[in-house]
Length: 135
Image (cartoon, rainbow, N blue to C red; front, side):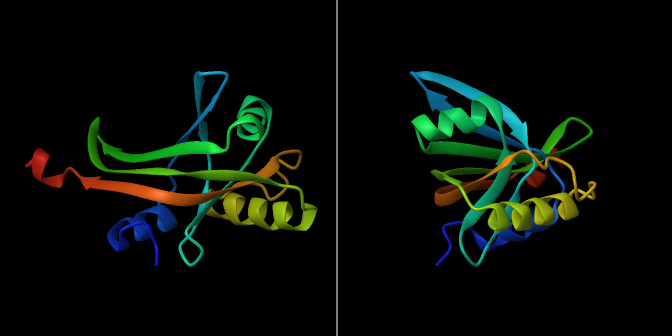
């Protein structure tokens, strides 16, 4: 059973939004934007990344993702996911995930060819809509 509420799953799967990926190493948080792909049937989020984010996951696999849709500067909905990240050392799996992510964001399929796959097993999810707040 998914930890992500069903109404949030559709938003995570369909919307082309930037996620803010939070990692932490040496007691210092690091937050950076990433593209992502949510696999509802596995309760997993895929990102392909490199640099400090990748190094931090290697040191501390506990991560967070925050996704929010805004309209004219007003939040419409938000999803925050907490989970455990794993760096995947499988070229075929990384290529497949990169193709899924690049297709979602309508990017060149060769974009980010040097990045590595990080799979995030979702442990908990918080979802909120703000539609009532805007009326």
